[in-house]
Amino acid sequence: MLPVIYSEDFLLHKTGMLHPERPERLTAIANALKAAPWADQIQWQLPTPVAQREQALFWALKKVHAQRYIKEVEHLAHRGGGYLDGDTPISAESYDVALLAVSAWLDGVDRVVAAGEPAFVLARPPGHHAENARAMGFCLFSNAAIAAHYALEQPGIKRVAVLDWDVHHGNGTQSLVENCRQIAYCSLHQSPCYPGTGDAEERGAYDNVLNIPLYPGGGIAEYLGAFESLVVPFLSKFEPDLLIVSAGYDATASDPLASMTLAPSDYGTFTGYCLQITRRIAFGLEGGYALKDLAESVVATIDRCLN
Image (cartoon, rainbow, N blue to C red; front, side):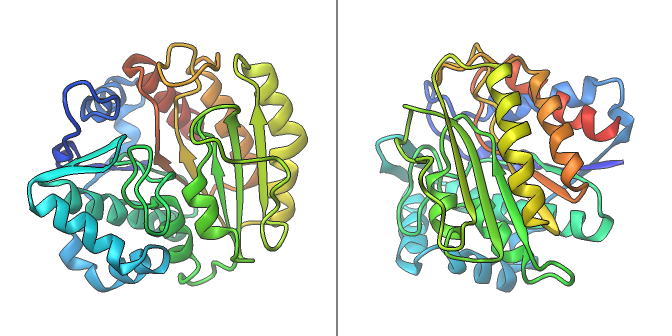
């Protein structure tokens, strides 16, 4: 059984009719998983309510985000919503939904630590662009960075790696983990592309950052070369007790926000590489905006974990 942590409450984060980061992303994925031939091997789990883990959740949240920024998100949402930046609208429910998403990512860590097997966090809003005191690129709170710091507080977890295969560089995640020697960060991303960060020369404070910029138009050949020569050696050398995957699925050929040429099935291949490193993997949804490809890509990821 593979846990998928999901709630229909994640659909309450409203971004507007034409915004690419929309609730339909999750419903497309959930419907595809329920129709998969191994659907009976998925263990659907609701995220822990925020009130039940409030102390640990806010400790983790404040570990990476400034208190004034958290309050800014809360106040804007509770006033009915608005824009945190030009790309990042929020609605009245968005603050509460974002907190629940953080709780879901923490649940993902808990499940993997307890079972030693993968789990998938099917939550929104995404997080890897959110910085210490700034929303960016559809992201409110930096879910992967929060989960990584939280994981280090769990028994037996001394080192955590974050692999970000979203087509956009996770500037927020990197900035929030690169000064911690117990966390490694690795990103494959299209360059040039939003947000314009992620240079290959960046190494982090402890040689714990590996950025792999890929030219627009790249496909499976470029990704395979990167995984085999760079990603797997870097992560294997770090020997993580837990691997968090910022699982964005926006490098497929049909995605409207990038220019890469992957097929949905390629994400199953990437998952296979991750499983060579460890089975203790918490996958969490980031980007992916072509609904059919998005859903098929998540199916490919979970299929590889189960088979």
